[in-house]
Image (tube, rainbow over all chains, first blue to last red; front, side):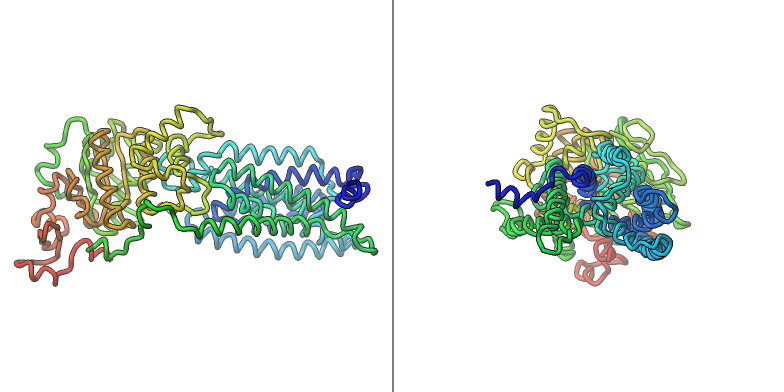
Amino acid sequence: MHQLYTWVFEPGFFASAPVHTAVVIGGVTAVVSAVVGVFTVLRGQSFAGHALGDVSAAGGSGALLIGVTPLTGFIGLGVIGSGAMELIGIRRVRGRDLATGIVLGAAIGLTALFLYLDTSASATTGAAQQILFGSIFTITSSLTVIIAFSVLAVGAIAAIWRPLLLATVSPDIAAARGVPVRLVGLTYMLALAVAVGLSSLTVGAILSTALLIGPAATALHLTRRMGRALVLACLTGLAATWAGILLAYDSYYWGSAHEGLPVSFFIVAVIFVTFLLTGLPARRAAARPREAGAPAAADASRDQVAA
Amino acid sequence: MPVMTEHARTSAPAADVLDVAGVSVSLSGRQILDDVSFSVGAGQFTGLIGPNGAGKTTLLRVILGLQRTSAGTVTVAGQPRSRRNPSIGYVPQKVLLDPDMPMRARDLVALGADGHRFGIPLRSRARREAVAEMLHAVDADRFADARVGLLSGGEQQRVLIAQALISQPRLLLLDEPLANLDIRSGQEVVSLLARIAADQQVAVLLSAHEMNPLMPVMDRVVYLAGGRAASGPTGQVITSEVLTRLYGYRVEVLHVNGRVLVVAGDADAGATAAHHVALPAAGAG
């Protein structure tokens, strides 16, 4: 029994200060990402989420250059980018897609420039790794700031929960019911920027989409209730993050070389595998024929209408 | 200039739920609606008929307060139009319900009651019962717990109608609700709406480019063509004279096997009618 225990938790896991920090910040980040991510998936905006990750990367690498914490850069530029994307592309879905793509391209270009300058200015090669792929064991931002941002983002989603859901189902119905659709959409995008900024800190700007989309998509495999989807997404995100931290810690003891493998890899790998596993039963259920008695699916042709 | 039957103004009941008077709309220099006037009384089933592009959706958006007008007034339940009017229930055109949306039919109906409110919803027995009652009213009990995105087109329309009715509106607006339904589902939706109009004394205004499915239940018609409207009791509006004035060119109304066909040009015999371009169904393109 004890052997199994030490096999799962390598020595010193629970005593390690970096592990404590990683578990707390990783957990908070996973919850924020899951809450926002459920709506990102339902609104079909995972591309926007990914683009915001790239904008965050530009912000984080720029922040290192001027000597402020990466989190300031991640969230600062993310908020500006999300506001710009929402305002530019508000009119048409296709327009939003284009706006997102253009912002994304510009952001990656800036990131390339900033990371080059970071590396040559400080003669360290860690900047690219830290910004793009995260640094959950060596976070320098204050826990208070991280929690404050998390409460802000989750609080914003809670406040606009019903109008956002209605606007996601049908912007027309929402507008007719007097929902300020643009304001609700903008609030959601700002919460998205914060979620992406926080997960850039843990799994990295490039991988933030995985933490945003993966647990949410997994939850949507499993339930047809919105509230349950939210809880399941949070649990999946937490489980993946904590399992990833444990595996990364353990990986130090796996080979004789004693080289720890990157935590971001493990978190994303767990999310990916969970998504695939939950998708199989869902797919099988969808393939089952509908129960008898229901009217036939109705996509009548124009001919039938005119007949 | 409005084309009106003499009846349109005078026969309207005193307590109209909807009164549209002289509404004009232009969008980027193009006249979409030109001096449109009509009214709808409680419990009446009114068809808003016209070819695609005639301005039906624009007119519904004007009534909802979502579209600016260049002239005219709209009164709903005695109040000037405004956004967030609880007297109006609305089922828009082409609502695409994502099969992945984790939402049961009853959840969508509940959103119709309080989807505009901020904050987290509170579960209450009264709310649950109101939703169940509304699902029953549209014969949707059977699939109340199914994912809305996986329901058939006709089932989704019922759920959307329940969603629109739960706030107990005086006026129910539906934009092309029959567009993607097979004939049988369409008939079911139409008779459901007729029953709701009669039972709950709701004024129903339903837009369609095909009027025949509505003929059995339609009390009155608002016919839109080229941005202008003719309105009144169905039999008085769907005539060659009125529609010819409306379209601005010779139009013939034919009754063939109990169906109404509106065709362009002179048609002296039923046999030649088939060679004419049918309006609006075929003209809709």
